[in-house]
Length: 126
Image (cartoon, rainbow, N blue to C red; front, side, top):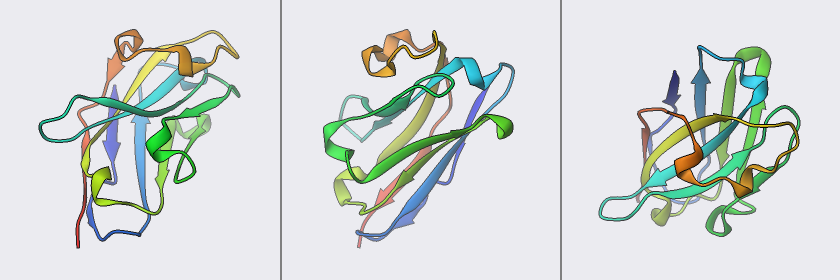
């Protein structure tokens, strides 16, 4: 099970941190992807973090502004967002898939992810 939290209505330029709390599996061995879907648009990947101490990947629109990290002891993955823009407004979801150590999660597609959360809404507006 994956449960996202932290979504909010914020002004442009501020920071916001999302959490993805996992249960039912050992997070260490799973890659976690963050995705978002804005109204009327297709779901897009924000970024991902590979299993164990593997690499992260960020989509170009968020690179340099968003950071994904994991705390396996808390079974939680975080999405730290800074410099938020109105175009970041979307429903944000996390997803999980068992992944071999050091396999780069950037090669995964959304269909590869086995488990999905329900999402948390982020609205960036002045």
